[in-house]
Structures are given as structure tokens and as C-alpha cells.
Length: 78
Image (cartoon, rainbow, N blue to C red):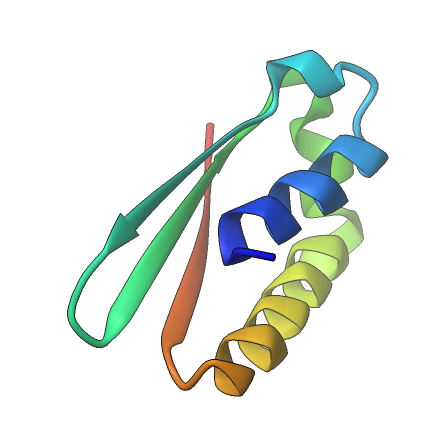
């Protein structure tokens, strides 16, 4: 499973409009940036109270990317 597939799976499970979830991966040599876009009214569900859900998604991503020895960063785009 790729990192962007992992984030898409988690995000689609959280939101009310899973068809609006877009995940784009920008790969560099050492780091890949994963950009997550969701519907405007689902933004709060993905971020969570005080950013807890977003932090949890970043932690999962970090653990999964450590396994493949590549750094990954999650950016939630409004």
C-alpha cells in the first residue's frame, strides 16, 4: 500500500463526502509531501478538535514511511 492510498483510506472513512477526497503525492529525493483535499464542510472532521485527528494521521504516516525508509509529510489543503 502506498502512502497516499493510506491517507485516502483514512480520510474517506472520516468524512461525509468521500467522493470529494483528493490525495496528491509530490515526491522528492528524500521526502514526499502528501497533499490532502476534502470538501469544505468536511475540513473540521479531518483536522479534529485542536488538530488531534490530523496529528494522529501524521503519526500513522510517519510510522508507515519509516518502514520504507522515506520521510513523508502530510499537508491538509483548504
